[in-house]
Image 1 (spheres, rainbow, N blue to C red):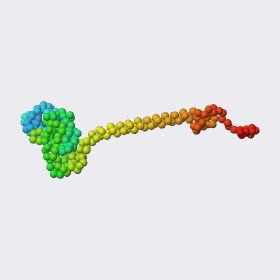
Image 2: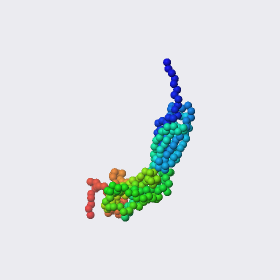
Image 3: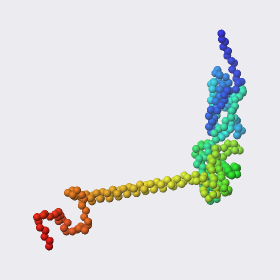
Image 4: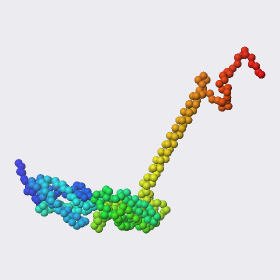
Length: 294
């Protein structure tokens, strides 16, 4: 024996399993399930987004019959903090969660150039890789003194460089550059950090050395390349001269080669130019011919 029981849907229940699927710089994908399985009609949800930094609210409406609902919240700000509430349109019980969007990236290629009585920080414009960043927002610079164990705010700029003066001898510093924080420092970009040490020892700092390494490489590499090319040309010239001398000697030896003797004949140089060069060579005397001596 069995009996079929159909439960009456309760529209006062909250949405189930509300969570974030993916969070970007300007959007967030959230997902939840209906208050009960297999809705037999369209359900209207109210999605309230509260900006915890700006103290503003936005409400979106989602109408669907699906048991599982996925929704994308757009027009958020990088590094923002939000409180999301999802409930049925009849103001039933709610489900909520907090979302932090991804902050702006750190500036690239941060380096230090040492001058006589100050240093200069340089970096690439953040607008080159962040479409949501405007140069008018600017950057802010912080400095950490490891000896004093303290962090100082140096200021902000809309340029891609910053001058730092009045550094103390023997102190090690770490400098960080990031997109300027908005709304009382609650919405900031990721910082780019660089170490500057060995100040006042008479040597360049390690950070300055690393910052100038690319410049040194840009000079050393072409010089090495020219040296290699010069050595290569020198080897080719020496090889060609060696081949030329070898060929000249071979031709000279062949011109003095005697096939009868099977060897090359060279004169001493004393008899060069004599008139009797073409006289027949005397090879010997016979025993029956008397030799007359005058």
